[in-house]
Image 1 (spheres, helix red, strand yellow):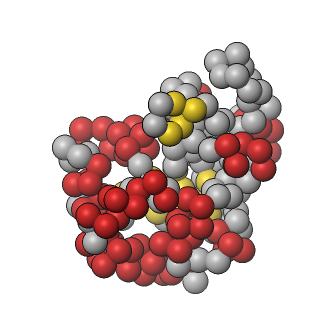
Image 2 (spheres, rainbow, N blue to C red):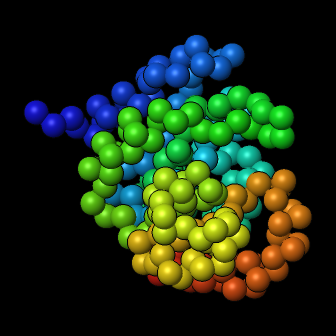
Length: 194
């Protein structure tokens, strides 16, 4: 018998697949309903999200909501947005920022989750890990070029750079992102959630 959606969410939140692979206890973070219309696939929770258990509950999340043109209430309404990271737990600190998402999570959970989602109109692929996993050889040579060519992945996927404040230099070098990509993102999101 197929697993119910509520059982699947419970299993994800109780997941221990990475236990012992980082110096803290697993704390999987996911937020969605079977009726979610926009799917947000990011990297992995940071330290603040690991502590709160609320996805995108940090400066990156504030930037993302600004790009999307939505309120906190809209973003955390699971009927509108489903939030599924590539790695469900905080992966730990690396030399220059957080470590990459754990490789076990997406293969273990994504297909099971997507089997329950029938109303997704758009999937946001945020950052190189999500884009490489879902687009494979369809990605451009660089993340910048993949994001610049976002229209070639529509209507299924919308590719974005990570909204981390650490990407300030990238944002200043690539003013086209806020001039042309963000308005198109907001228009697309508005159409879906109205």
